Length: 127
Length: 477
Image (tube, rainbow over all chains, first blue to last red; front, side):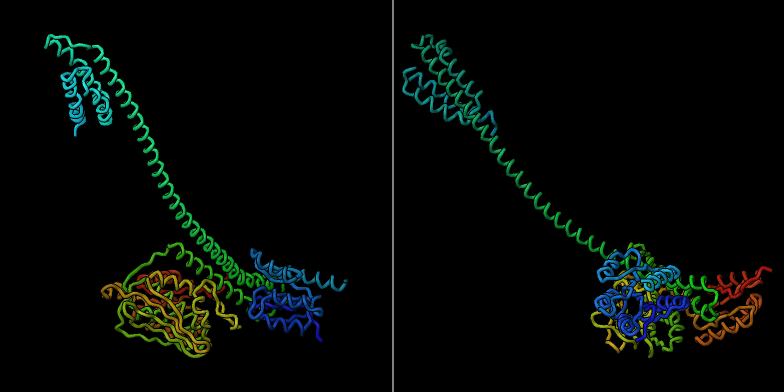
């Protein structure tokens, strides 16, 4: 079964693509999903180490996908990062109750995202 | 009856009783026993001062009588004392009864005051309850309004953030990585450009909506020809439709009666509906039309797009409602267009609704009241003739010094169905305008400043719109 570094799920193609682009540039293996169902399929198929989930997506929302990941013995080790909007504390609540590991607020800086990914993957390697 | 007259009348029987007593045995007279009850009865009616006068008269009666008869009356002192005792007793009785009745009056007053107070209290209580009800109603409404506002704000902020995220990400990517190939970086710049456009559209729409919300929209009402509105809308949206390979047809009776409305707002509604139709239709046609329906003109925009769910028919007019998530590749939009359109139409006293069948396209309708009397307005007529109608039939004058730019612009415009004329300099363009009036001027910034500004002045005075483009990258020579 293939194993990739990162899965990016966002229904805004531009945002998904931007993340995809920088991760590839930094040398990671990345896959994209533009809706919730594709994201769920991609999670089981590609076994990514880190999953970026937009909170609101067609077909399945980010928090639902997060719940699926965290309740599956095979998948729950994945690091789930939920993309939220600043000022929408309710979003954070939803993500937290779904068991998300981290949050990134939009609009985000790609550089910060990359450094975050770096440190996560580094600590996984060491751990 | 006058109070004094009454007193006089009541004292008469008593005074007349005195001689009766006198002549039937004086102090021993059997009639003296009538005195006391009579006084008691009368005292209820009489004022004490009247009793006093009556008693005085009776007391003085005998001495005066003895003066006239010159004959002493036997047992005079006893008789006088007896009468005085009667008077004093009756005076006291009167006083007591009066004070009792005064107390009773006071008590009754107090009771009626109490009753009226309690009535007033009841009334106030009822009022208070009504006020309370109204207040809690208002409170509920405010809460709802507040909730709506919060939802609206969070939606706005979400909608603002999405393009902002793209702009930020792509500009940072472009800044951070030097090894991006030309095509990719150009594409990223295009994304940045597109997203900033989306952002500015959204900002404009939010501002529009807030203006409408605050009631600050000044409607510039006039008599408007619906056929012209359709032409205008068609002209604005046609390039977009052609680009997507869709046909755009207009159905209107030339004699359609005029409506009463703000023409710019009307055009905004038509363009909003047309834009949506183009956005949500991947193939087929879009039909724009107007027809008379009673006291209204009914406008409609029909498409052959995906259609909408029955349960969405109301909701799509809400702020930030987007067509169902089932449609995966949903087009970008602020989600405010229909909500703004609804407000504009309702401001005009009309209605807006949609009829749709999933997979069979949608038909949006809105109605606008007819103009009173339905007289075509001259002002409206001339204005549209000058600017808008000519703009459709007259060619577009493209002025650019650089021949490749000029050619590219003309080619693109002709592909969209417009006639074009070309000129290399503003001076040459001015020569052309002497023989031919263009519908629109597209003008590249040029070094030929004198003619450049003369051309702009001329365009302004002839009410021809000009679009300035700057395609050069100037190097400071």
